[in-house]
Image (cartoon, rainbow, N blue to C red; front, side, top):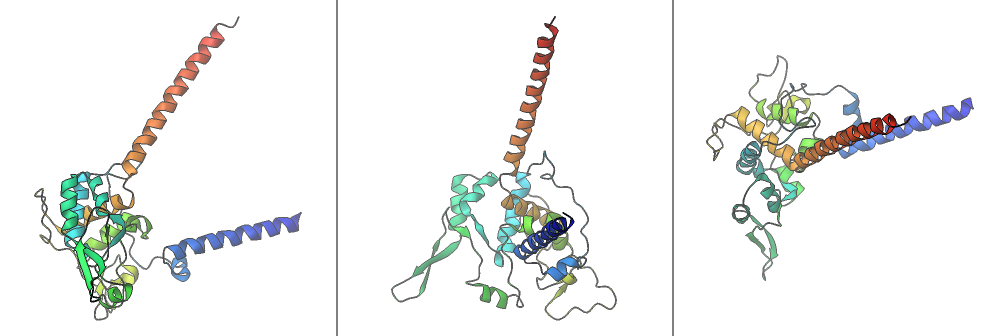
Length: 268
C-alpha cells in the first residue's frame, strides 16, 4: 500500500509539472524564467471598474481606448481575433462601424498581373497586423515581433496592472550600473527591464472626441481598459447573469424556509 501511495504521489507530481509546463508554453514563457523571480518590477495595483463580481466596463473609457489603439498601437499590433463588426459592442452605431472599417484596407488577392490588391475593409474583416508576415514584423522592430493584442489582457503576465504600468513606465532613469543596448529602452515593467518598443504614448498625442485631456496616464488607462474589453467583451453580461442567479437562489431559499416553517407549524 505504501509503495502504491508513492506511485500515485509521484504520478500526481509529474502531472502537475506537465500541466504547469504546458500552461507556460502556451503563454510563451520559458520554464527557467518562470521558476525565477519576475525580471520586472511588480506593478502597483490599480482600481478598475471591470474588476470584482459586480465589475462593469466604462464604455466611454473603452471608446477612448480604441482611439489610442487606432491612432498609436495599430501601427505595429494587430487583433486577428477581433472583427470590425465586434466594435459595435462599444456602443457605436452600425453606420459608424461601417465607416470606421471602410477607412482601413485589407488584402484582396492579386490582380491579373500578379500584383497584390487591397480593398476597403468591411464588418467581417479582422483587425490584422500592418506587416505582411512575422519575419517582416520582427525586422521592423529590432528583431522582436509585436504581439497580437486580441487576448493580451488575459495572457500577459501581470495582467492589466502591468500593461498600464508598462505603458506609463517610460522615462525613468536606469539605476547605476545598468547598460541599455542601442535600440532598446529602459522600462522597469518590461521583461529584463528593457524593451525594443519606443515610448508609444505622449501627452496630447491622441485626440479624444469627448475632449478628455490626453495625458500619458489617461491614454495608458484607456487603452488598457479597451484591451480588457476586447479580451472579455461579455464580462458585464456574465456578471449581470451571475447577480441575477444569486438573487434568484436567495429568493428561492427564503421561500423554501417560509414553506418549511408553515408546513411544520401545522404538524400536531
